[in-house]
Length: 122
Image (tube, rainbow, N blue to C red; front, side):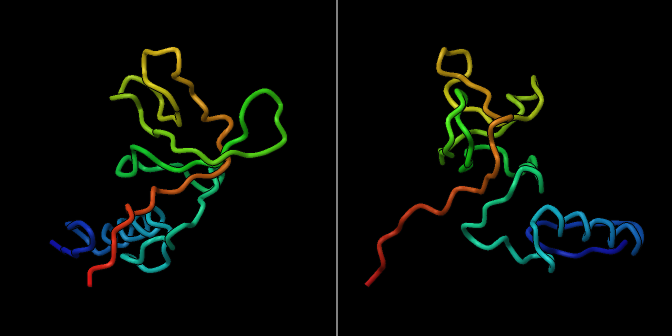
């Protein structure tokens, strides 16, 4: 068995399987080298890829609001499969409330939320 450790541990039976796993991780993290994170603040076009299951939750999105507006808007949205009951989608508002809205078709790019602000330690 061949084992390598990244942000997680992967175990495969063959070198070929390991290479496939490395390629898959490289694609997920958008890096040429495994373990190299995406540059902070990098927008990811939805045409390039959608969030993977490990990235479900709150994300920053650029979208074109419905109603024929000519500008884009940046908001925090949720990306999930609604606990396995729906196709993964970008949505805003609270599930089951009038405010809930699926905005998947309007989203043009997304990125993980940045780390919260921390005051510098002296």
